[in-house]
Structures are given as C-alpha cells and as structure tokens.
Image 1 (cartoon, chains in turn yellow, purple):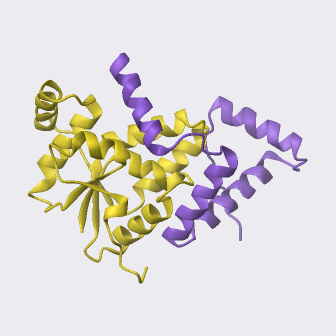
Image 2 (image 1 turned 90 degrees about the vertical axis):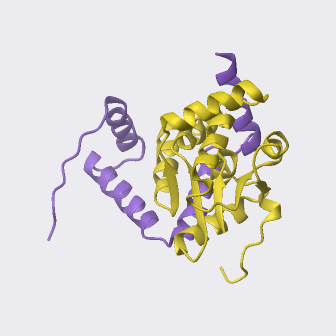
Length: 147
Length: 83
C-alpha cells in the first residue's frame, strides 16, 4: 500500500494516543520496503515541528524527533511551483486551510506517478478533504499481522 | 585507543553543559558530553521500531501530551490563517 501521510498522523509517532502504536507499525512497514511506502511533503516537517512546539516539547527534543522522522522510509517531496498553483486553486474553491490545500495538491501531483492508494489522515481532515481526494483513516487500513 | 573529537556548541548549549556538569557532580564537561554521546549512540543502535517507541517514551516523560495530534495540527493551521 502506498500512502500519503498528512502531518497529524506523523505527529502521532511522538505521542501516546489512539493509533500511535499503529502509526509506528506502519512506519516499520515503510522501512521494510515490502510494498508499503509513505509519502508526504517537506512542508509537513515544519507542521510537525510547530505541533510539537505547541505541545510543549523542548527545542532539542523537537530536533531529535524531526531527525528521527527523516531516518525512516518516508519520501519527503519537495514543494514545487505547480503544487503551489494547484494549492492556490484549492484554497479559492474550498473552505480549507492553506496547509491542507498544499497537501492535497502534493497528493494529486504524486498520485499517478507514485501510484498512491490514499491520503492517510485523522478524523477532522477526513471530513474536510474527502470531497477532493481518496482519504483514509488509520482505523480503515489493515496492517499485516507479522510485523 | 581513544580518539578526540572537537565540536562547536551554541552559547545556550554551552551554558546548559556548564550547569549540568555542576548540578550532577560530573568531573568535567567532557564527561557529560561522553555520557550524552553514549546515550544517543545507544538510542541509534536500537532497531528502527524500538527507536521510535523509545523516542515516544522520552517525549512523554519530558513533556507529557496535553492535546491530541489532530488538535495540535488544527491549532497550528488556525494560527497561520489568522496571521
């Protein structure tokens, strides 16, 4: 399964909350490279950093977390001008935040070339973005048992 | 055999190193750095999944979660929208 990762599912990796174990298992699958691949935007790293900062994590720990995130089998796509153009069109047509629009645009850009199966996100984003792209929640994906 | 490695620290890191050396009764700042390096190398030597679980635990011990990931990202987005 080839998934685009919205930042809220990435933040789960560093927090003890619902589905954070599953998210760690998923990253472990990406590391094994057995048909499971994760993609996101480089912009997501900034959003993860901001979220951790808002959660009261100290600066050095945030840096450690981001370094760790980059060590795993997740592809961090560069932000391209054409993605920004697409994001601009999304922001003007739908009631979404600029960051959401950038992720949707990045997903659409990668979708065909990288054969993505879905956009993995939390409940809030699921409701907001499902009109535009094939969104998936962590509860909706089944991981192989032998991990 | 031993090797000497030189590194540059920011002013705040140097101050923290000084403070920790005194507070915890280390013999020298080098000893603190050696311990920090050993600890970090131990973390890096774990299997990827174990490393993530350990790092999550470190995050929770140092600063327990107050809000969910979803709420934090939402709040950050709202902030961007307001600026």
